[in-house]
Length: 168
Image (cartoon, rainbow, N blue to C red; front, top):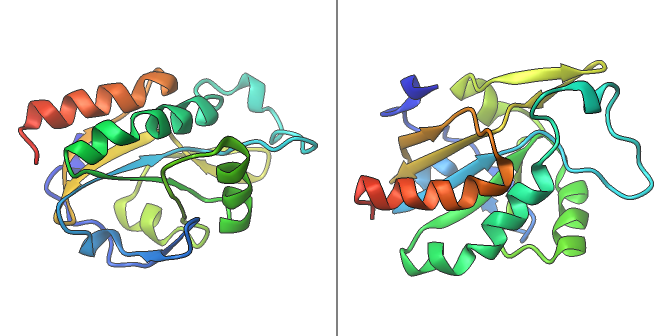
């Protein structure tokens, strides 16, 4: 996925859990997009075979890590967004239930993922995003974390990468 460095983010609007539409190609400054496969919900079964798929679990710890690190990102002027195929209603419930401080973006139409040819995997009959974190400056990718081996550590590792890049 390092081949994405230097690639412009897709010029597409993604609905955010805070009610706005975010266009990654037009985000000024430094922004982070942590792409995750799926967030579970109490009372709903995980996708078929989920427990047997390496790296499938971890979206909640990953999102909580970014939420907990929110102030550190803000101090650097870095915007943080989570991205998944789930619709904004499902994501909004997750944000509210977990008191997340970062907005999640719905790539339900998969325009973002398709344009960047991000890795996906199947569970049952559905495709899910493979855990990938993108760092962009003025809408152009300057760093990629893939694979994200330890989801709960992603926020800290990404912050260190941003500081190492000298951004902002």
